[in-house]
Image (cartoon, rainbow, N blue to C red; front, top):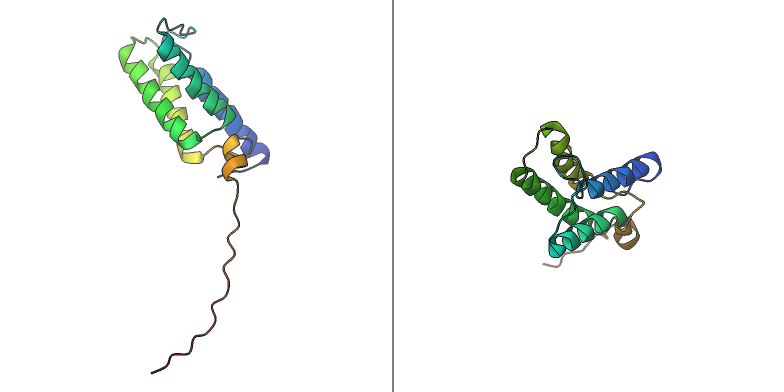
Length: 123
């Protein structure tokens, strides 16, 4: 879930792409939302994705927001608009990568199991 190297860089780029797609309207232009609450919510979602904080949860929310924006807006370029929700779904399934706050906070764990000692049963 936290690969480093080239796969980790790929996940970083994927997170940045999904974060940027939250601010692009179906027409392909920057979505300047007049509602300040919506703008702040989208900025918080994209900031969390860019930093890699709670990536599976935030990417699920981003996918839902992207689908809602797709349904609400009229889009002439359906293929380009579908890439945002699909990228969010891929990010949800793959995880954040090594270059994220999730990796720093929850990083790889090594679980060491101790061998079991034989038990003697008394009857």
